[in-house]
Amino acid sequence: MAAAYHGQDIVTTLIEQRFMYFYLVYFALAALNVSSQNVEKAIKYVAIFFGSMYLLQFLLYPADVFYYPKVLIERSTFRFRVDGFEFLIFLAAFAFNKLLNKQVQFYPLLLLAVVVNFLSGSRYLLVITAISIGLTGYKSKALSFGLKVFIVGVFLVSFILFLPKEYTSSITEKTKNDLQQGEDYIRIPAAAFYLTTYNVDVPTWLFGNGVSDSHSQYGIQIQNIGENLGFYLGDIGFIGEFVRFGIFYFLIVCVLLYRAIKHSRKVDPVLNSYLIAITLFYVISWPFGHGPGIILFASVLYLINKKSYEREVSKVDANNTLELQ
Image (cartoon, rainbow, N blue to C red):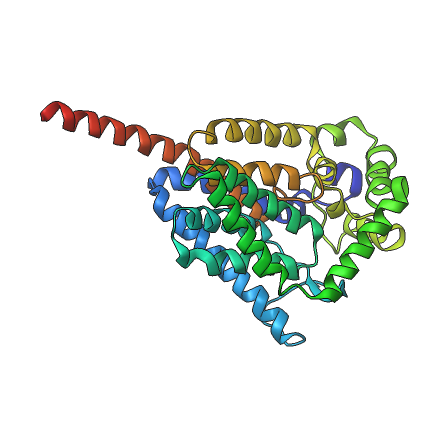
């Protein structure tokens, strides 16, 4: 619809939407028959790399460690606008699950995931990460409830001890101001604008407006709306995705999330906890609207099927062994 409604040619739109092709990662993993252990290792290493690079960039700023389109200096931190925090949400749940299974060597990874999400300056990332960790602990059967509470308590105390007071006060003040604004809170009028004023045609409701190129007339229009009105598509989560890709894509994602959460309950507490957390994150962010998020989502979908299959094979092998005895 970008060509019909915004004068952006189809080729440009297809190039700008190239991150959508990363859903093919699921089929690539299936074709290669990659083991669940190797997929988990790959996700873990990507998360460690992303977290380490972000931490290094934070420590060495203003020197450039990696490319970032924008940096905000607020909330007592440097907020680099980059994609990939979904990997840290997953890493937090993964590492915490390992801790519950008495593999203490994963504690630094849990700390890395939480600290980098903390440095991002996003309250939502911290909350979603906490939810992911909490759900993993609740669903895990490795330890008793009391011991789980103790481990969570030790981690929280050790983290809070290193929490700068300036950050805490700035986050508290920001949250207080947002709550006082009520309906005037910027995300609410932004969502209303894109739903009722900007996106009013049936074809764009069905198929979306497409992803804009920053140099096209369409891209300049979106930038002007953000800069002049403060209405950014990236701030309104699934509504922003709906504006870009339409109701069909939104419904497909919802169905995939529902089925994945349902089937992962008996497969892996980490996968189930991550999916629930990322669904909540979808309210205010784009976990399915950029390359890293889609790669991880496709990998998690593959892990659910692969782990379920491996479990069934293991049961069959165990039964065959008993019969031979």
